[in-house]
Image (cartoon, rainbow, N blue to C red; front, side, top):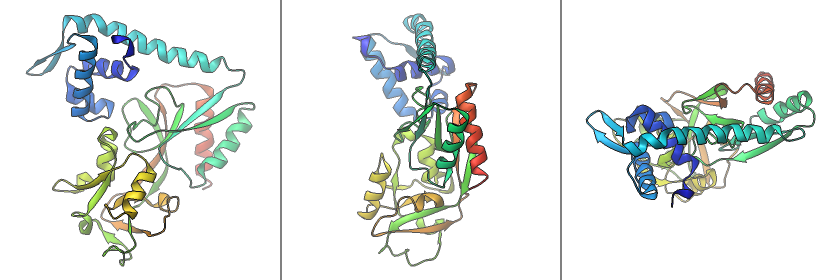
Length: 294
């Protein structure tokens, strides 16, 4: 039955209906094209009718798809409005901060102090979000703001908090571990620990795909930082890491070396474009101020 359709499915359906092209919709949603196609087919099976027909330029809506589109848009709009209404109903309020890895760098502590001073009575909740959601929980409304690494999905605004060189984490007995710094060229044939395919461009970024002429060797796919570093210490591959994260994820048997030949990574605070709520603006301003002190 169609009662169990998820909001994510509706969001995917609406994006494809607006783009009329699965590839463009996948780019907009920050998911891989095969993953989006698979999800759409599963949705059509669940509904019991087709939503799209293929044409040379992409896809067109079926009559059932045309009938369902305004309903899907309305449900998504009502869910977003309902979340905001529910949050506003709290006596004070809770700001939900999404994050995919530990942030560190002294950013959170000072920002939270400034936020609480400006918003007395407000609580802050930290939400750990998997790498399969490159928006840090902003896309589904579960987070109000999020610490994420660029690039970010469409529809989000960002303020860069830290720009850091990328290095590599590897076992301490790795043949390259004796070098003070490692040219990326020397890592091309190494097996890499990869983020899940659903991480989209973020997965490509941490594989440095744009600086490769051939496909990277994937040692294993990992869904959490713990899985990544467990895989590295087990000798299953190496992984690119931002300089500031190297100190956050030290492990016995693991070493970090700077990598030359790659541009730096950018850690940002992100929020939904057009979100004018006072608590969001206050937290971003607090972070901007605290980032200048770090």
